[in-house]
Length: 149
Image (cartoon, rainbow, N blue to C red; front, top):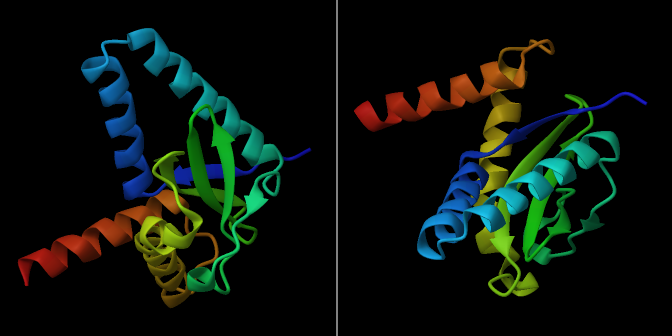
């Protein structure tokens, strides 16, 4: 069975960094942080093979998006599957007690906007062979241009 690729949005990367830092530094439990990281890695690899294995998120704020979630230890990993690019897009990683389905709009809207920007850039370039790294680079470049103006 063919495996898909994956990419973390900036927000998901920041979530992961903050979570691992909190566990390893604030709680002084490096082994727990390492175990969580390994479990997230295993889960993402599993999603690359079985992209629809997470539960669909049903919420009025994300109509038209196929956002899914999957539990990893005490965290929920929110993601989208882009069947055209054959890619899992990790949107957010949220502590279970912090997560509220009614607040999913706050959790995913920024990440969905990033996903939409990536899709718009890909379509604007009319290049279906554009890699996700190239799309992410285009987004970073657009943000730098915006900051300069």
